[in-house]
Structures are given as structure tokens and as C-alpha cells.
Length: 429
Image (tube, rainbow, N blue to C red):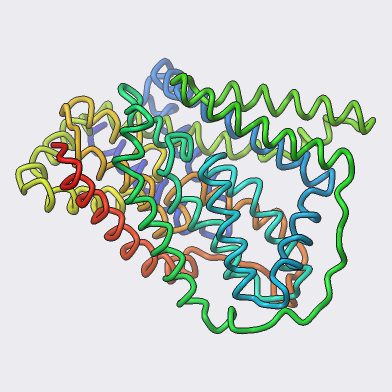
């Protein structure tokens, strides 16, 4: 019965997470499903504890990023970024879109896609409120670029470390394998979005925006962000986990700013979305539950079959199947399964690279495809208590899918094509 009931509970939980009946948040469907698995003893308590412990690095990373985001908001960094962006646009929605896209790309590359969702989204929302323009083009940038640019560097997406957890390629090899695919992904996603939102982006910004000044504490927070980037790059270069260094750096920055400002840091802790950590923990439990039923054997057999199609065709098939699968189970658990499959099958070269591209870029299809996109959605819900430009922000599963159904396949095909091109030029097999 376990072979029937366990997959059924997991499938129903994920389906409910995707559809959110009655607006009930994703976390309750996933954590509830995980709890049912434990209560019915389909997952032993010890195995559940081990699964939850696997996510410790992710929990610490998210806590650090969310804490830094709340600190930046408190010290007016978001208002300052919004003012700079809108004034830099010089009345052009199209130029504002380009600025937001560029900033989102840089934040994703050097601070990870989760940082783009957690830190950048509130700043962009503040900017479009000041500019009194349609918010969706700019907010969708935060969601899509968080995945489109997430394989430029190993630190650009925690999923990269999960997929290649047993053998992260050296930085030079990484750039040779993923440099061109990342560039294609970023450029194609930009042009697709620019086309899809062309009517909104042809308009002008009519209102005047006051020049917001950054306080001394705000400048200290920006310096802290620079420190965070240095910490992430150093930890990645040393092949260390990113969670603990990120969390410690965020705690240090918060302590310094709070002491200087004479504020109470516990208020920031209360603003952190702790339910997000519960969602991630539930996903880890479900992954281990599915793996205990022999899922790795099936995925290993499928990867071997795809490899026999030939290197180039196999890479395209693998990339698209993995990319679509993200949106059924979320890319974090899928990354765990993919990493185990690559290790068990001893896959390398183009096929392994296609798996990673699918894990990173595939989630742009739906709003629940990646942890970063879920964090983006949670940030929007938290920040959109007021109307933006007269329009209440509400990004449903179907509204996101209308954009993702165009943006994801085109960018994924371009990125996989870039990977095949680099494989031919470099000659790796």
C-alpha cells in the first residue's frame, strides 16, 4: 500500500500547492502533506529528521537574506534605489525596464536568485509605486531574471550546489560550459519580456519623483551588501556551504547597524517569513520519501535512455524534461534528485550541463517552479497591501503561466543550444 499511498499524498500535496484552493498558502499544503506521511508512518520519524536536516544550509541562507532585506527596508535603502531607478529612467518606461533588468541580473549573478526575490522585489515595487506605472512588467523581471541568470556562477543559485554537490567544476570550467548558455538565456528572456509587455513599456512616466537621500545607516547597509557578496564569492571559491557564512554576515551587519541606529533588532526577526522555512523543510521530507520508493532507479534509467539518443538530441530532451518537471515538484527537491541521479549514473559533460540548465531555467514556466519564485510571490503578497498605480497586485498561477509559457521554452532552447555550441567548440564529451 505504501507504494500507492505515498506517491498519491505527495502528488496531491504538490497539486494543492500549485492551485492554492481558497487562497490557502503553499506552505500549509506541503507541510501538511509531509506531516501526514510521518503520522501514517509512510516516512519513519528518523528519516524525516534526516531529510529536514539536509536543508540546514538552505534555511540559514534564506534567514540571512530575509534579515538583510528587512534591515534594508528599515533604513530606507529601497526608497533610495527606487528614486535612483525612476530618475535614471528619465520619463521612459522602456528605460526603466532596462535598468531594472540590469540590476536584477547583477543581483542574481553575485548574490543568488533568492536574493533577487527577497531583496530586490520590494525595492522595485517601491520604484513603480513612485513612478505610478503598471507594475507587472518590472515585477515579472524580478521573477524571471532570478532564474534566467542563475547559472552564470555557482553561487547564482543554491540549486547549482545541490546538483553538483559531489563535484563542483572549477570556476574556469564552469564559465566555459555555462558562460554562453547564460548569456543566451539572459538576452532571450529580455527580448521576450520586452515584446510581451510592449504596450506598457511604450508609455511615459509622467510624475516627478523626489530625490531620496540615503542616510548614514543606509550606506552602512549597502556596505554590508558588498560584504555579503564578498562572503558568498569566497565561500564558493573555497567550495564551502553558503548558508552559515551568509547568515553570520547578515547577523553581523544587523548588529552593527542596530547598535549605531539605537534600534531593536528583534523587530526585524519578527518580519522574517519563517513559514518559508517550513515549506522548504516539507519539500525535503517529500523528496526523501519519494527517493525511498526507488525514484532514483527510475531517473537513472531514464537518463541512460536519453543519453543513447545522441549527445545533442539527448541534451535537448533532458533539458526540457527536467525544466518542465521543476514546475511539478519545485526545483529544489528536483535538484536533489537530479544531483543523486548524475552521481549514480556517472553522467558528465553536456548531459550533466543540460540537467543543471533545466533545473535553473525551467522554473520560469510557473510561479511554483523554484524556491526563488515562491519567495518572490510571498514578497509581493506581503508588500501589496496597498494599491500600486490604482491596481492591486495579484499574480495568480495562470497569470504567471501566460508569460512563462512563452518565455521559458524559448530561453531554455537558446540556453541548451548555447551549451551544445560550447561543447562543439571546446570539444568536451
